[in-house]
Image (cartoon, rainbow, N blue to C red; front, side, top):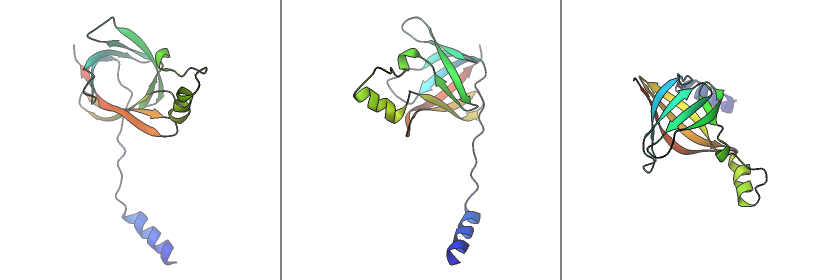
Length: 137
């Protein structure tokens, strides 16, 4: 009886958690900033099912995306996909972590939308964080 009473007391005294609202990124042009110091900021042109990445070197390239919900999308770049003929350590990595990587959208503040990039297999492992800054051109 005391255990049940203690559990009920704890449940009612827990602070209210706020789940951040997020939305799909609106179509447009964005500056992408990564927390990884060796990745320079770059621009993307974002559309519903793909984005085009513009970088300082080389031609722009298109990456298809699949929305997994209002707050998450997966990049469907064939260069990032698991090859079913892989064996050994590559197969172990894929079995543990899944296809790289999902982008989880977070808090929005004006023209800035924060993100986290994760592997989402057996564990959610964050590999990057940053933000999308909508460019008004």
